Length: 256
Image (cartoon, rainbow, N blue to C red; front, side, top):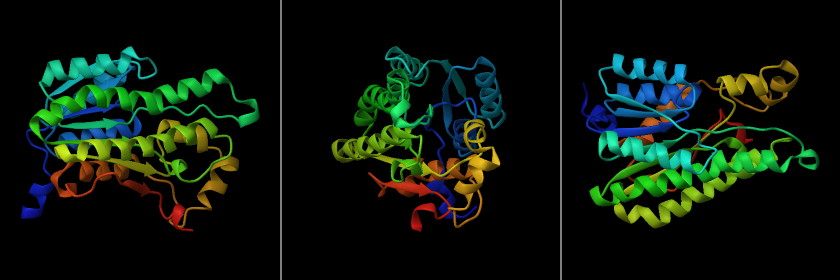
């Protein structure tokens, strides 16, 4: 193995991943475990939590599963408390849990707006606030917030989603401003359409997906592992000089 592999190695690190039961979250937990990290997997689906636990343990790493609802105030606090109790400290926080409740602004429901902001924007803040003191104490840490290309490009009928992800990008920059001095690097990944269960639900029909696909110079949608690999980079020492950055994973969508 080359020397470069050590810069991507996570042996001895503990990672908390929200939305870990499927899609990007599941693949992120698997990829980080494959790189050597122990995993605190957070989700609401008991069957999905069992599956991600089995995948992590098959790679020889520890996995603690935490059932928590990121749409509540108590959910992120519960997740942080249980993860810290299990591992003592969290070295890597991946705020991946997200929802997309679609509708044109003129018809938007206040309840949908509030639910979107709670999961996509408030939960990452609450989790980071609980986890960061331990990172400050050990003088190192990584936070990766899973945003979206729709944080920088407007999509019709995605008002609340776009606003929440744009807010997450700016929250990330404030986190970087306040915590980089403690050797904590905070970044976002901003994927285009990824063929997760949620991606299939929103973009699976040709009449919806084909116009979006036509805007991607790479001429395809993404795969969860492609986002997970970018998260691995941002979670590793290879990215120690990257902080406050929004990493677009979009096949060239925003280059046009």
